[in-house]
Image (cartoon, rainbow, N blue to C red; front, side):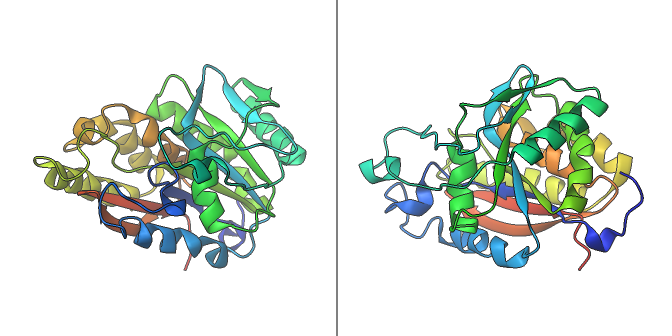
Length: 275
């Protein structure tokens, strides 16, 4: 990124998006208050970042062979969850798209050597609209979703983040949406899940607090961390963090949320804030 006044840059975020439409239903797969702390934290994001003009969200639930930009001016919602109460398929979050941001994302990716394509039909999946409906309930901010690359390569996603970094100086909040633990067979505290989730979470917190090429190199080798493959048998829910970290590579990160949810440790991170 060109030299800029760091005080003018928005940070980047890695947020946990919960389980399905968990924030908008009576939760019956565990204590009723399972998601309350996460919902309260997400609900404060809009107040924490009052200068945001546009949102660029990278969700764990969209993978493409070529990095793909959602280009609809009025994206629908994609109810890509199953078995939840009927009312959760009637939720709304009518945030507008942003043709201007789509063009900027394409230009930055191309300059960094990434091909891209547009998808004018794609809606906001639940990794995007569920947490953003909590964080920005008025749905007024123009919002664009960007896919993961189907390679699921950590270095590729860090590089995508680096390419997108200039957007931070233009009022764009880059939001990676996933989960710091995503082994669906190990939720509910089965076996040693809590201990192993804490092992990986401790490594992730320490690693994200660093900066520069050293942090990026460590994140590229995330699978060598303690209990890494137990926590992420498949890495798609961790890769949005790579994009967020790459977009603030030369700035430290910090854990801004942590909770024990369904018997495992879950965290959220911010990269690049100055206060």
